[in-house]
Image (tube, rainbow, N blue to C red; front, side, top):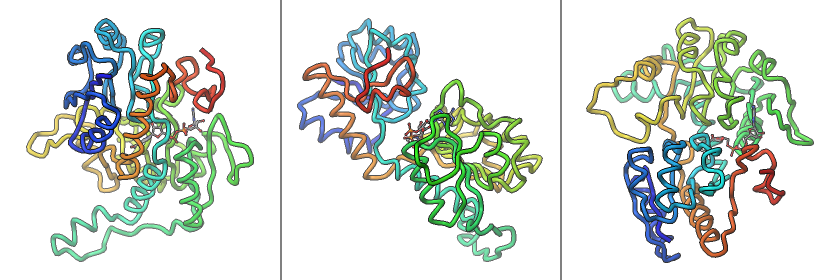
Length: 342
Ligand SMILES: NC(=O)c1ccc[n+]([C@@H]2O[C@H](COP(=O)([O-])OP(=O)(O)OC[C@H]3O[C@@H](n4cnc5c(N)ncnc54)[C@H](O)[C@@H]3O)[C@@H](O)[C@H]2O)c1
């Protein structure tokens, strides 16, 4: 197999190179993101390996297909950047459904704790010999209500973490799990009742901008919003308005609607031209990390192993172990062995 890897960083090589040698596959690591301009670089490759901010729209699918690519192996769990309708019957799409849900849930907890106790501000203060604690007051999490949107792999681990802090947990998910040891409520009730809200659902047409002016309006003025899932779950403009009018307490964001332009890159010598991101970074009660929720040694190892195994099983006998169901985007549970519904 010849595989073209897009949007790669040195750490991708560290984890993928030894495995590719084990399997005897030839990998080309491109730093460029996959898009209509760069898709041609995969000409005569059997497979393409893409990441969260690559663009796999109709134009890209057609270029890849025309040039011989038959497998798109996503080295991530989310797949909102793939046009499945265009890929159907041309390019098979597989992903890494779950690598280390704990990594992302723990990062959500890190954002929550830092934001609540203003650790990001304390860090810069003490490094400047400023030992004042004025403005750094948080609240006890004990007894507060955590509202979890999406009770899948990551959401459930985050729920356990919240329970460890003695929080009351409520959740919203259109596909609730049976025998849950927490209460499911409507999305509206969750937005009204929660002291902290953490988003753990995929980005779909139904969840796009699930946090918007309407949902923000019913939240409490101290509510903290944590988003480690996908940026477009939040309407950024309306979040900024809510922060400006102090109608919520703050936001911890590992993802951002327009992150593809900035995240994973160093722009420290440049002028920020994204006014929304610049505005978010200006709030003392907003903490932004650069889509690093997944970034632990365990997760990187699992991502590399599952991605290479996905490619290998396709190579050996055409089996698509972690194929995404194009019709229902996973709700048919094909990945758990059920019959595909498309
Ligand atoms: N920040 C990171 O580095 C990082 C890493 C991995 C995953 N993620 C994101 O985390 C998300 C969750 O991952 P996961 O492994 O827990 O996925 P999962 O598939 O195990 O769980 C997703 C849950 O969301 C629920 N859901 C679907 N539609 C919903 C809706 N309209 N409203 C509320 N809930 C809904 C599903 O029923 C499911 O229970 C992924 O979709 C991905 O976007 C981020």
